[in-house]
Length: 141
Image 1 (cartoon, rainbow, N blue to C red):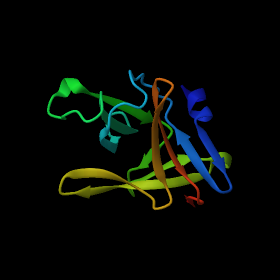
Image 2 (image 1 turned 60 degrees about the horizontal axis):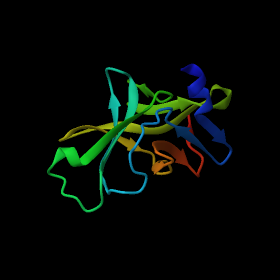
Image 3 (image 1 turned 135 degrees about the vertical axis):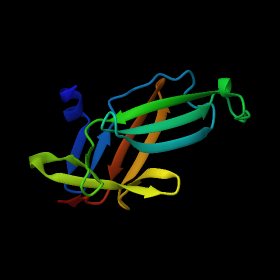
Image 4 (image 1 turned 60 degrees about the vertical axis):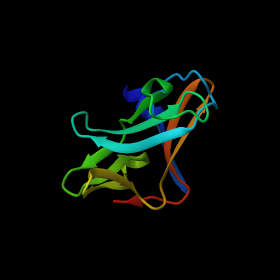
């Protein structure tokens, strides 16, 4: 697993990208609408998890759970600084790079990514992929 983590983290002077090592298979690459997505911190696994659900076909009602697929992709390279609730990873040279934080609210704790950080997801070649990336420089601490 450690090798996968190294292969899935890319940093450059202009930014970084973290790609989940998980590759769940999908039946359809393009069919179906994205119904829901959520990025959350799993405190029992100590991992950042991305949940995404799709209709199996386009324009289908969401009431019938047999008509959609839910996928879970982890980002095991992301860590949580519990004292500050900051989410970070260790970049090249051992530098800590902050990507976001946990925020408590009325509906529980949610992940908030930094303004210059985005989550990208796609379904191609029969699999779901998820990447957290930035084009700007992340804050080093």
